[in-house]
Amino acid sequence: MLAAETVFTFFTASLLLGLAPGPDNIFVLTQSTLHGRTAGLVVMLGLCTGLVAHSMVVAFGAAAIFQSSALAFSLLKFSGAAYLLYLAYQAFRAKPASLPEGLHSGPRRGALYRRGIIMNITNPKVSIFFLAFLPQFADPTRGSMTIQLMLLGGLFIVATVLVFGMVAIAAGSLRRWLTRSERAQVALNRLAGMVFVGLAARLATVQR
Image (tube, rainbow, N blue to C red):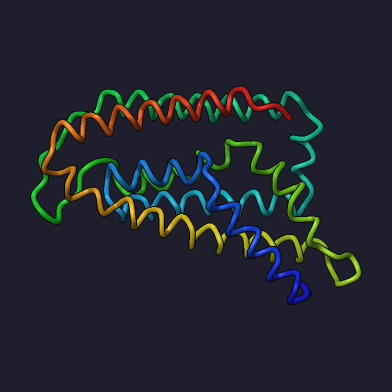
C-alpha cells in the first residue's frame, strides 16, 4: 500500500505536470473550442483511457521494449504523427457551420473519444515517461510493485481529469461566440490544423 505522504507528493506533482503546456492539453483545448465543452470532455476521456493502457504497460514491464527497441519506438511515433497529420488535413478542409443555439456539429462523440485514445497511445514518450516517473514513488517493501504502479497510474489519471476537465470547460465557453462568426470558425479551424501539424512534427522528431 502507498504511504499517505507518497500519495500527496505524487498527486501534487501530477497536477503540476498536467498544467504544463503539452500536446494533450493543447489537443483538449482546440477540440473544446472548436466543438464545445462536451467534445473537449469526451476527448479528455479518450486521452485518459490511453493513460490506463500506458499504466498497465508500465506496471507489467512492457514499456521497457520501447526504451530498448528503436524500431518499436519509431513505428509507434510515426503512426501517431501520421494520424495527427490526418486530423490537420480534416481541420484545414472544415467549413464554417451556422448552428442554432444548443445544437452541436463536428465529429461524433465516438470519433472524438477514439481521437483521444489514438493521440495518447501512439505517443511512446508517455509510456517512457510513466516508466521513469511512476517507479520513483513505488516502494518494494510496501507490497506488490505492479499494484503500486497501477495505483499511481490511477492517481495520475485523476489529476489529468481535473486539469483537462477545467481546460475543456473554460475553452468550451468560446463555442457560443464561434457559432455566430464564420470567419472566427475558419480561423480557428486553420489554427487547429497548424496545431496538429506542430504536434505531428514534435512527435515525429522526439528521441528516446
